[in-house]
Image 1 (cartoon, rainbow, N blue to C red):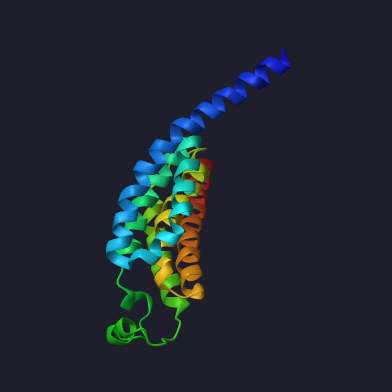
Image 2 (tube, one colour):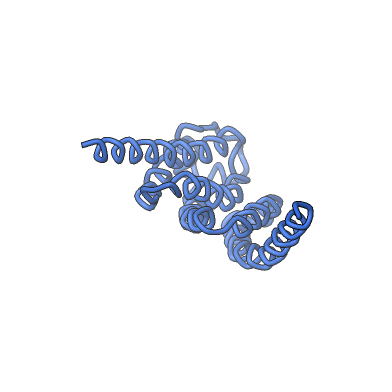
Length: 184
């Protein structure tokens, strides 16, 4: 009986995974178009990571998928952020000319943190909180990684790290407030 149950579970999960692939491709397609328009063809190097993230989100479903779609919206914001915000020490002319610019991961960390904090009010106040928060990080990262191809490694890590830190900080704060209010 146990072997039959395991076989059925495997078949069920494979079916979910196969059904998730077209959904992941449909979700990643507009991201690819935006990445080409904003960052050029080099951004597409990271597109398999975007598709993989969305394949996972669609396969897992419910709170993780809901969080991923919320993160997707914030990720689109990262694509729209001008590089002059993410690299304030470089002039647009220098960047356009391909000149060496200083790195400024703190500006990216700040921008990412603000995005993460903006996502926090959309987290549920129940057991789904952490799964939804993980989905938000996956959704943002799946899009932001395409923006990060125009950044140096430290700046890209700063942007993604700021988003994660913002979501986690706000999640912990909301959880703490919920515990305090329930203990009264």
